[in-house]
Length: 293
Length: 267
Image (cartoon, rainbow over the protein chains, first blue to last red):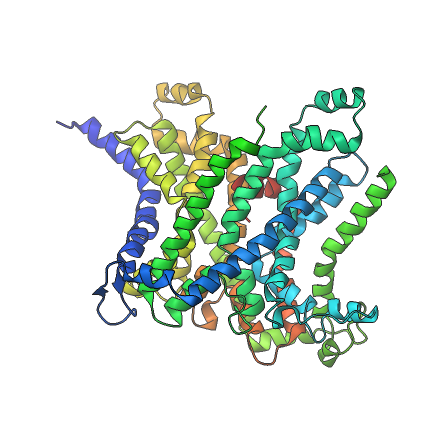
């Protein structure tokens, strides 16, 4: 029997928990199952759903548009990840030294991080405007013909990479700075006493001890990289002629342009699975390269 | 590398880093036709054309206000729902607590992209497409907020609660009078993160909003750039309007903002 005290206690738990439990159930967990259910049907968002089993998945795996979207996403990642990491690392190492004005410089490098993707994309769309953008103007004034940037198929993804690296380098810097600050001074001191050059002590001491932070950066950047959408959608709309359309835009287009909710849901689950697998693989691989003290 | 050279390189780099902001501002105050001719750091004809045009093409006051109200409301909701749940997980005993907590954590893994289609259908079923309510729905509760705040509630000394208990206070009073004031730093950090996420959100508003009256700033700006005759000074004017509040926030709460972004691991 639940006595009056038990009822009261249950009331308290409900009061504290339901404000978050109900919305999470309705707007996160239910839609998650909804996505799984829709992915097993053919559905144009209007007429009744038709059960098609795993057909959507089978179709997507052989579909040229999906394959292109995956390749665009991977191409974006292959350029973005090393660039943002190396720039963030260089900034963190440089700004870890003590000098007057250091914190001002740090906040300048961090500024793009708090700017919205839409503003970042528009700013770079304007800077990299092929006809009258500042970058091509500067290039032409020194005799280099500027490329077509986001308006040309070959340069569309690199253009989005430029904007993304500019926005995220400060984020990587902050994470790696925290990692650098946790490295005990004595280790570097010992290396110096043993006659190590600055270069040697960076690669033999600092870099290995920074690998836990680097691991975090790589995991987070891969997850957000697979979900790349805002900046490409605003800069190129996935174009020209679909040349830069990433996976998330393919999901969006399938739903709202082609009325293929089943295919879109299946693709979103495949993307989710892909991210999950990549993250788990990294978790496994980290033992080989991440140094924990 | 010598110390001086290093500082010089870092300083030049920092100037390059903020140059796009400068250029956005310069373009926004460049008068009409000049935008399309030779780019100039100091415009030959400066003016507020861009801003005027912006308010002509879009109901821009309303769009700015939308972004503001949405960010404030969703931040308030997230702080309320996250802090109460944090208290429940850290201080209340109930059957199945661990299972429920794991359930919360599991929702952290689900990306927005998976939710977009079914959530849109759900919103449509409730007849809420193209309303303020549809914008708020995904930001009422977040397991991330619960997780973050639970950590800070859990480390508070339990003796404070027990002393209040002895004085006859119930959970509600303890939560309001003791817990909330003590976790204020965490609330500020998470609140700033929630505000910026809402202010900058794009994918979900793009999916549920059709009419200009309900657009948020990112949506309004993106819609401008999609038009056939792109007015760059108007677009840059809109960008300035959308950056300024975040810059102001950054100026007063930089430390908290850096911390919240680093903690969230989200960009």
